[in-house]
Amino acid sequence: MDDTFPVVCPYCGEAGEVYVEPDVRGRFVQDCEVCCNPWTVHVHDDDGTRYVSLTRADGSE
Image 1: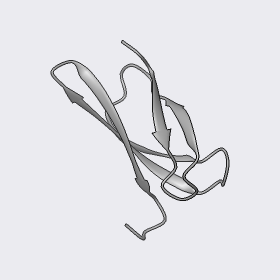
Image 2: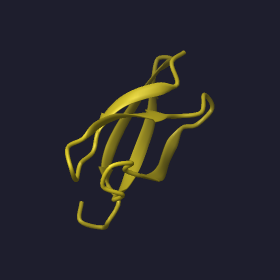
Image 3: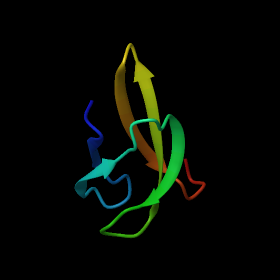
Image 4: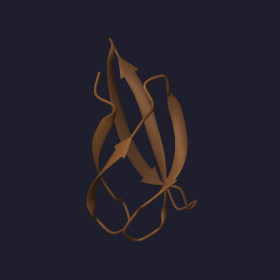
């Protein structure tokens, strides 16, 4: 199972990757390495395949 996922920052639009531990599910906050704004990283599982999506974590969503 791959633990690195491609993402795009919802603030600055910079493409990057986020590492997620194999046992992590749910959500956590991480900062963009480029613009330093906070993301909420959502980790969900669908029939054994993990997916990651990002939203802003500044209360504007």
